[in-house]
Length: 381
Image: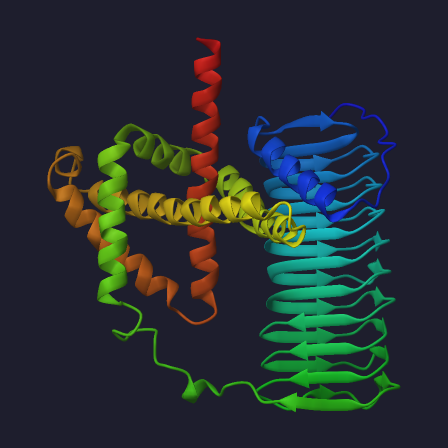
């Protein structure tokens, strides 16, 4: 990794400039070669199967990878997407992270927004700004100097929180080492569990009750999730996509099979990174047309990514039978079977949304990698 220049630009910009920076960030990340860094005015963009930040970054950092470790300080905003993310060095401004497993063991001078299946704020974590956490399992063992909001299935608190704490979860446990200096407001299917040795200076209030499991629709093995019209529409879209772009679809499927971690990492960064850009553009009023166009492209990319995952599964189903079957009219039967199987699997409680996100991210990442590899080939020619 090379040395990077300092960015002397003002760290706080107007909403339009912020939206422009986010959009430029995503485009630079998508066009960067996997595993290599690209520098623009002091900011760093990285993508690859495994990314390790082993030198200080004097600017903003945007990175996507299957596995990522931040070992050196980042002076600006940090946007990260990875299957496994470990932040061990200080972050000079805001932290935005998404992935499968996210661990923070350092100081964050700004706000922190993290979405992951498992989130771990370790004892060394010290976050100065507001904290928003969303995931399946959340462990707070560090220090938060402002308010914390959590939405998860299970939440465990051992650390120190200065400010109000808001939690929406099925199970909430406050252990003996916890120190909460503020009000606690929670919503869940079960009563909060508070160790007698835990210290809470504010009031503990239950704002509502989550939907009981028995009241939830039975969606795991039933016919409910397999909506015929939706499946028919997805199948028609898959047939149309393959009819119009057969070689492109085949290339994307090969990328998913040969570089799954790279595809998921890049796709995750785009999945979580594009919506804030569209919202910021719409808020600025002037950027409404661009924001709406970006939202439309994003929706199409999500659909295309999901269909690429369906084609990948269908090809795996056809592999034991032979390539001749896959290249014949049997292809449609394999695609329909893969579509039904993926729809059933993604309807499993808790694990289903994560599987759907992984499938969409893999397909979207493969789309971007294939698109830019084709552009690079055309430029070389």
